[in-house]
Length: 129
Image 1 (cartoon, rainbow, N blue to C red):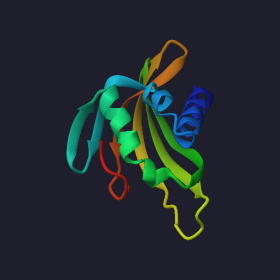
Image 2: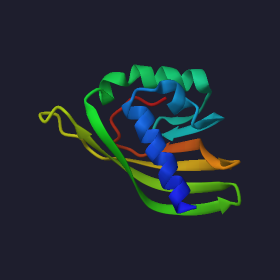
Image 3: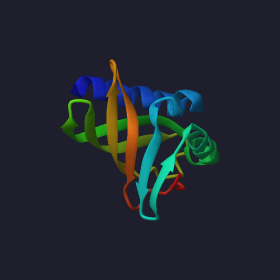
């Protein structure tokens, strides 16, 4: 299972770096729940696409993204919780890239995973969905 989840996050990172918002948004199960310090929001695909496009400048200089999985907790036979820290590299050496911590709820659909919910940890810089 861990290898499948690692592969999922690698595919997610590739879509993010390629700015393939459709692919990135297709990796969610809708409605998806976003938990942040401003509250809880259920989002649909349109919301997700708008979020990615609105935050394009935030990620524009990123040349690498790696998800460090700290812990995977099985919630049910079809759902897991993944504690993840994203590490980025940037083409702009003047702009420091801080790691971002998230907790993902993933749902297994067939042979693949989808993001069902995200807990955005305080301190992450981008706008909430």
